[in-house]
Image 1 (tube, rainbow, N blue to C red):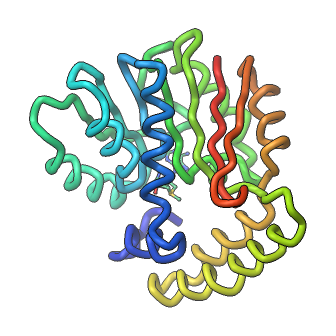
Image 2: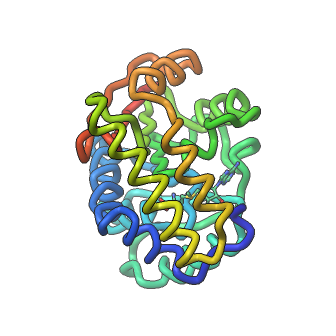
Length: 227
Ligand SMILES: C[S@@+](CC[C@H](N)C(=O)[O-])C[C@H]1O[C@@H](n2cnc3c(N)ncnc32)[C@H](O)[C@@H]1O
């Protein structure tokens, strides 16, 4: 699905989130940097927006990496990386979450923006991915996940699902020309875990402490999991 990236991929993300995706990623980046990591990873970086936020907000000494297995996404991320100030340590690398190209315990923080759903929604490789994420995270390191969630209020949840299925699916398909991708996005987000279920998944995977902060009436949220 990510081998062909629509030319207006970033713009479509901004349209379907009313521009709020930028703010949510920035909040996730601040959460990543709160523990003052020496090395931070944007896992499944896509076009690299979280990696750029991390690089811009972090001290020059912090080493920031972005990893993804979609070459077209990486090409866009590398273009953006050129706009980040000199002196920043930022690298964008090719890699599959199933076999990350980093040594054990390399990162103090791993940020994942709007890709955890791809890694865990009906994905038979979820366990493998979680083992790899934990492997490259240092002891006490944090994994910060910004992702769609399920609003607690039944009414708001219903409205959110309607919005996904009627607006996101249609407008995304129309702007991208890829009906399948945006139908998948809408359906997987509507059926994705609640914050409690996601918390349980992370604890079962081996994280020892998980907290959750809802954003936008709980339609989106940030989980912070400590190894
Ligand atoms: C919905 S996009 C999100 C991209 C970006 N993080 C953002 O905030 O816009 C999901 C990304 O996950 C990547 N991805 C999915 N599964 C992956 C895997 N197993 N290994 C590496 N990247 C993966 C895709 O290539 C895609 O770029």
